Length: 127
Image (cartoon, rainbow, N blue to C red; front, top):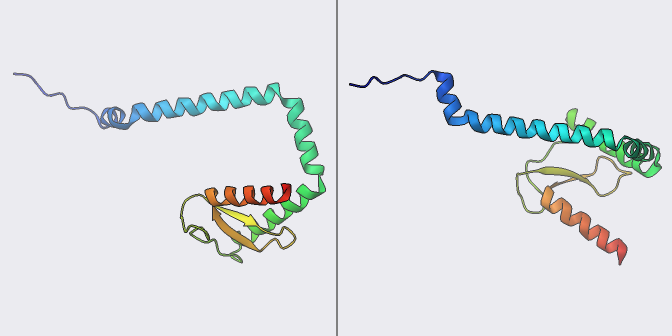
């Protein structure tokens, strides 16, 4: 007669979910190491990029508008919508500023609609 071996709770969890959990953990760790190495190799390029980004006056206006909108959301002056204004999707919502001078006029779009809108704006400017 064979005896059944009772598995510990940890062993049951590991057999059910643990392998995938550890695989994901090490994949994330590998990506982090890759990104860290890439940043070290491209330090000069990154420093130049950030220096130009923070000194550009148009980028400063955009940054200030985004920061003002984020502060307004945190203070509940602006209510975050729970759906996209175009397709009514509830996933991956992003803020869109149609005019950065009026930082509190925001349209809530899903990522897909937001990309489409920016492509349309870019194509209009090129035409």
